[in-house]
Length: 192
Image (cartoon, rainbow, N blue to C red; front, top):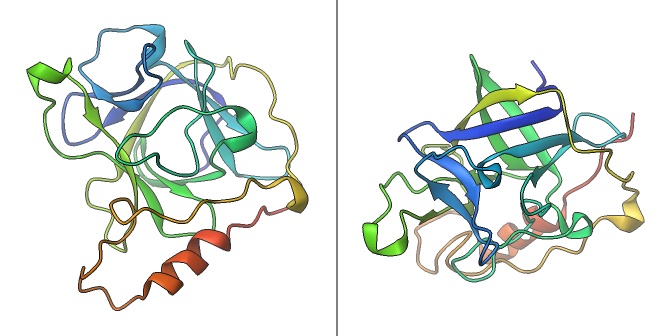
């Protein structure tokens, strides 16, 4: 079941937190719900098929295709992640970078009071999607406008993964860093 474009609140399925784009720093994380527009997201479908971008209603920034150290800053459309939203059950989905095993992960922790109830999200390469399920609560049909078509030449260049966002050195994984980089750089757009 594909997700229909529209406005959504995106919930962490392991806690009572929602995906939020903090308007001061533009970083994306999970926060306690308060119903603000920075906790509402446009889910947009690319005209080429069933690939998506997710844009914050308040900041107009998108979920990015890479990390900035341990933070995930919102970005402009040209640097937006090209996402597949894989339906799991009911209204639960995995949010993945298209063509990869890289998932948007919530940290499975409650935010600390000294960080304004913020907990970061991250992009992780993993086979077992624990901590990667998101519940999409539909608010309206408004998808905030159309996305520009992406061609093979306009796919944003993916930056090499940071050691803290894909695989740590000595992680015990059977994959080498080169294999991880190849997975990150093999993102393609499906044209229908």
